[in-house]
Length: 389
Ligand SMILES: Cc1cc2nc3c(=O)[nH]c(=O)nc-3n(C[C@H](O)[C@H](O)[C@H](O)COP(=O)(O)OP(=O)(O)OC[C@H]3O[C@@H](n4cnc5c(N)ncnc54)[C@H](O)[C@@H]3O)c2cc1C
Image (tube, rainbow, N blue to C red; front, side, top):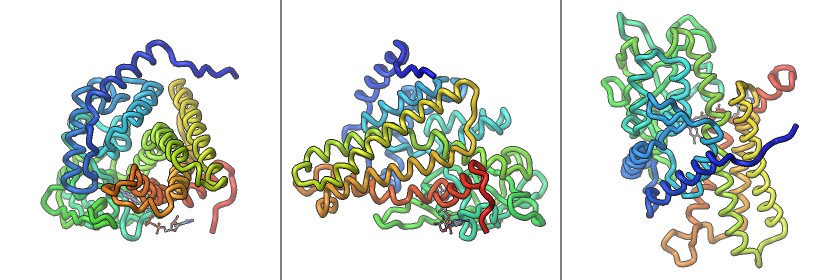
């Protein structure tokens, strides 16, 4: 089958527009980390600025604050976004995971209420799925939502909720049927985080900032209107969200292609002292980033032709998380002890950004469902192997 890898004149023109907008608007000095209070608000301001250019959620319909772009345009946008080294997206769980879920399962009222404020950066969302005893085994969820008239009363404890320490809203899963087991009897509920009966406690990380939070529900009341889908449909909806998370949107190839370009630059600076094995690792990581991009263009074309993403979302998740590790491990090998230089050190160059990226890449095989779990899914549902014990 012939594959056309050329962009159309309209796509090239769109690229030019995005490039010019980013050149004019990307902050010149990097923002503070989005895992701290100051940086969180700086990143919210950046989301608002993106929205003024109508670049916040480009694939969304215009009525919800998007520009109705197709997936190829989204990939082009992402390439320009990372090329410009624009800030990380503080509302990523909202716009890439929950937004598409809401479009699929929400009522017209819910879509009108939540999507525009998500697109504008006015409401930042956190994901409340994991619990102390329910991580990989998400179906072990114990937090409950008990119906009381036209409200649910929430009780229980969520953990590892990224950016929940500062976020405004949370999409979470609760057990609504106390007699139910496993993935039955779960319900998807949207709740404000600054709300009576909702206690958010930041988890201080190694860099001192509360990038994660625990959320305690102490008889918090939320209207039944905040339920997404039907009672008991939570697992089905959550699996659709997980498909968006692992499959396409959360980690666009541009992120890794941009890192691969920076890695090449780093290599050229240190080539004279680099081990040949490191040179091979740099080349492999660059090739993998390019392969991931080509594969994603293929997936995007397939989706635009009416296809869907299934179990291969798990393959995708393993690929990008391991690619991120490989890129950063190669950089660490090139930098050696220099990786630990503080940003102010004269010889630092980009060392601190590489070290931050390396530490974060270590989490890649864990979040969005661990890679071991993705391998189980691939073994059972793609390869048809018997279930593990
Ligand atoms: C950076 C980051 C951001 C996160 N953000 C969020 C968030 O916003 N919201 C949220 O709800 N959660 C979030 N999480 C939590 C994440 O979803 C969980 O950490 C993950 O699902 C694993 O659960 P666990 O930590 O309880 O580990 P466990 O489930 O206890 O797993 C421990 C180890 O055992 C392995 N294991 C477990 N079961 C099996 C099995 N059946 N077969 C083979 N191996 C197995 C796992 O792969 C893992 O290596 C985040 C995590 C990280 C690291």
